[in-house]
Length: 235
Ligand code: URA
Image 1 (cartoon, protein in one colour):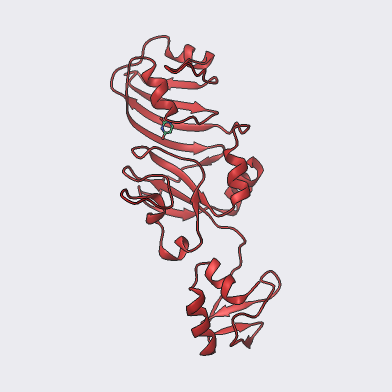
Image 2 (cartoon, rainbow, N blue to C red):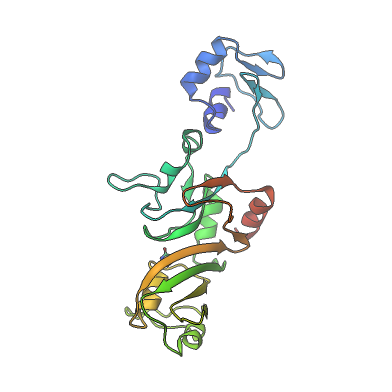
């Protein structure tokens, strides 16, 4: 892999910056300064140092974001704020994209990666990873809601939902829903089918990966090695 490509893919600098830094002697490979950054190296076997910092090579990047309200689940949008705007420039250069969508007004756990094949397989309809949400509704839900959600309710357009777990608190206007599928506006449409309306929605887990409670809305962190293993096992 070219040195400039490696550095830009890791988000450490642009290719143009790499060329300048290389010329000034700021890049070494296995301890030897390399002026020509078009040179090919093996990042898994060779050690690159950029301006005194050893470059840690990772083929793919994985990030957990606590999505705030008001952001669309996209990498670009002409008029609305989008989730990758919440990442620093260095990460944005790595071209991460969200694994799955949350509505603009839904908050909580969002995973972003540049591992296209893994994201594709995680998003496949054959995938039945449990996704857990906290919600509030405008009115208390009716007494049969838990049973009906478990049996699989039918939405207004005739779609028959898979069995879902519903746990309500005493008010019956807030609780937790666990889904194994992710249709467009699914929870909002499920609640709407009970002549009710979702007033807030937060995703708190995807499979074994839980939203890190130390992240405030809009904050992100890298997935841990263990979380990456879980994600790969789910894919
Ligand atoms: N269900 C919804 O209705 N919206 C989401 O963002 C996620 C699940």
